[in-house]
Length: 97
Picture: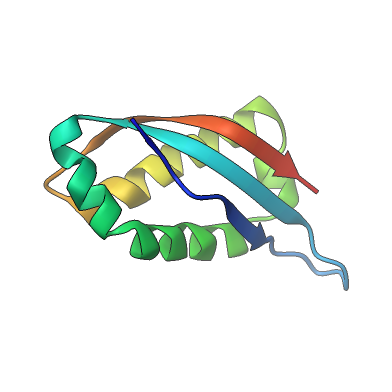
């Protein structure tokens, strides 16, 4: 397991004041893949922020939104660290404002 640093991102909106997401999560993976994830941490954070900037608040609300974010984040990370792979993501913090 590896705790990922906190990620903050402004979400897409047509209004002057944008919504924001703040999240912290733990990656579940084999210990042999940990070094690969740590080496790619900045690129992973950037890719997740880019993904979030294209999302609207309504897409991330509730359990369905959290599940979607979990699935998409897993895909982003696995694409960047291939051939290594994470097994799952556990949210420690998920604040949508």
